[in-house]
Image 1: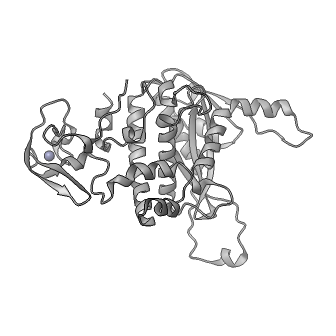
Image 2: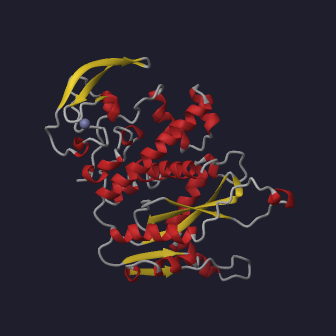
Image 3: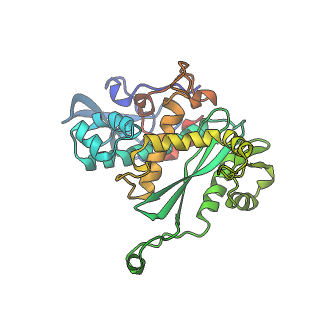
Length: 357
Ligand SMILES: [Zn+2]
């Protein structure tokens, strides 16, 4: 079982031993077990914190680093903002509102959200490496949003566990939506041309490829009648291992068949709930808002922050008193985690597979 660790900054300077070299091009970056040798060379104090930070020199590559290099707050001038900003980003506050509340510059919040997004993605990779296999049906759909203007659509592939409600991935697909722009705007040459042919198919293929790698036998996939999903399955090498159940989006007019609509809503509930929560919890994902994402990578990063919160921190149901999270349902953790727990240590991309052992 995965236990939360003590935050790096809270560890005593005289007890802290670097477990590996943080420099990615050093042979000891992939050091496993005890016995990594680094020489202690003094310490320093940061302006924001009077506590000592021990410094080291790697005996293999001869380059220096400090305890802060292993922390999620490395080279931050206001490390105390990391946890509150993370909490407020999933409490539907926009960057300027957060900045006003925490008394910092709005650009600081933007920078911290990028840092948190990168951490959330690596943390998710780590969680997926630790997860042995997926033994539940997957409910799959794309979350539809946009970046900059409503013509620049962004679909985010979200596979959700049918029983655990665990979010197994976040994969973006940028494409051009139907143009409703005026003739004048259409004539502007400076508008970007982000059309990627088959972006939705490709994001579906990538997601399913990953899900199949985590499934021993057959993967049960539940989705709506989006025609790109069968096309993506056909392009997969092991597509025959997927049992695809389609629930078409029914006619919801008064003349439509209500039983079909009910069956579709029941089958797709876990992913519909996730999309509702994203719209409810993130300011730039609301409808009719003046907050909107400016960069595709940042929007996907903030969705990763949301899915990290949904998987490890937020209870499955806040109405019921049981403290159960989706990560507990899939057997990753034993207790609900907090932002301090998930931000306790920096996750190095090259070491994800090693840390998962
Ligand atoms: Zn080194």
